[in-house]
Image (cartoon, rainbow, N blue to C red; front, side, top):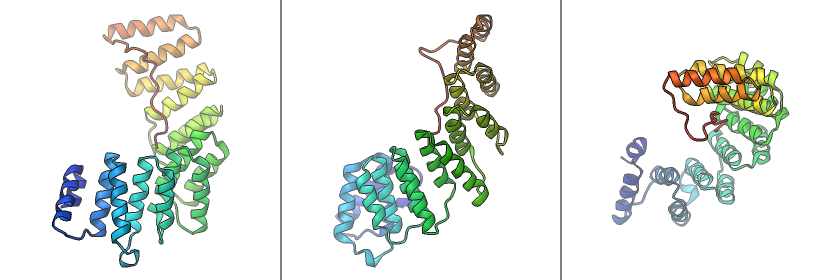
Amino acid sequence: MIWAFIHHRQFLKVINVFGRMMDSSLIPTTDVLQGLVICYTELGALRLGKATHGHIIRNNNPADFDSSALETSLVKLYARCGNIHLEERCFNNILLKDIVSWSSMIEAYSSHGYDREALALFHQMLEEEVRPNGVTFLSLLSACSHTGLVSEARELFDCMTRKCSIAPELGHYTCMVDVLGRSGNLEEAVQVISDMNVKPDARIWGALLASCRTHSNSKLAHFAAQKLMELEPNNVGYHVVLSNVQADGGKWGEVENIRNTMVEMDMRKSPACSFVPEICNS
């Protein structure tokens, strides 16, 4: 029942069921406790999560059950709530760390700006002969993007595609385009897009466009903006971006043409709408 509620994101019902179990003096299994921790993670309920963690410590003997999945859930809870110290402690308590455990901790480091720690943990994982997956690499590439670690990003992408034979997805490509573009390697970023095994989306072109404007490459910025327009021709934000690109290059005639097009299509510019898609959310 609890996992059915979780599947349908009815987290408060899970908490209610657990409360009734405790009132009936029933002993919750590891699966039940894991489900409860997942609910608190989704709700961002750190205080309740810590209370459950305390219950686990007081009432369960780690030798009596496999707690790896439960400890991994606790890692995710503390990562969600930003408590690095407790998530590290939970991770270190996992006796048999699987790829989910490692990836969860790497993702936690990456999402909270501990980018060097994420990379160091990745190398430790390889030393333990645990094979990374696509989620692992997405967190690592995101860390590289945050910090501008271009060489490390190239090495990770090569490791993922060549050594691990993992096909990149849109998130991986977005991070690569972002980290290359931010560092001024615009042509290399374009080459990454050309080599993609999936169709580029707005995040990809938005990442390239943002970098082109940063590095004053109006020609490539216009190209990226046009690609955004092709994806969603009725999106007012993209028209505004293209107008801004033309203005950057002093092409005021083109700016006027775009604005006339927007009037003809009955588009209205939202306040402060210089739209570039959100980059590299991993």
